[in-house]
Amino acid sequence: MSWKAQWESAFVEFVSFEMRLADAGHDLGHVKRVVAAAERIGMVEGAKPEVVLPAAWLHDCVVVTKDSPLRSRASQMAAERATAFLESVGYERELIPAVAHAIVAHSFSAAIKPETIEAKVVQDADRLEALGALGLARCLMTGGAMGRQLLHADEPFPVDRDADDAASSLDHLFVKLLKLPAMMQTQTGRSLATERAEFLVQFLRTLASELLIEQSVVDRALARL
Image 1: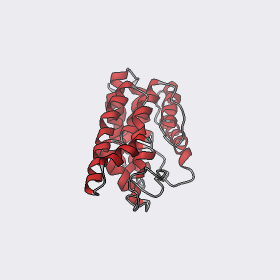
Image 2: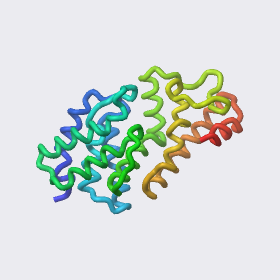
Image 3: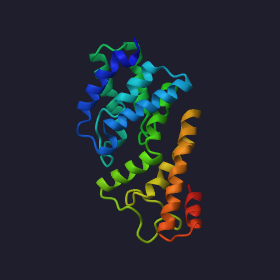
């Protein structure tokens, strides 16, 4: 019996309940996409699906808002909750520590180095969600929910100022998103991330055109990454 046939329905039920209060950028749809990406990357990279898939399903099972002082501990809290769940459903005990490590290491804010190929796959899959069309949509949606302005009124592109994503959603592309391809852990993840990052660059160029800003300004901002 495949992992999906045996376990997926139980994971969907658990995650759906635990994440019922999550923001729109980190809802069940986000989790399902991370699972799909992790499965895709894991197959190419030779990772164990019995570790990758539960970690991908459970990586956000504890809801902590982006602006919470507990944000840096969110992945640790999720790993602890996931461990309790896995034990309660009789998941293979010897696999649970590897699943927990993959969950802990997925977080950008926690800055924990992934030590296994499974953890690397899950981290890459989650970070892909921050890139491309979906990544841009999630960035702007989350920024709006947190009361951030869309862009810096006087200098939309951070050239002569430091990027500040606490104030501007657009600055988040320069603070974090466009740096992600170089931070990917697997060759497969890096290739996918590079492709999706190109979409963000094209968005910036289109935005500059609409704002009547020269493309050289975009180039200068990108050069500061």
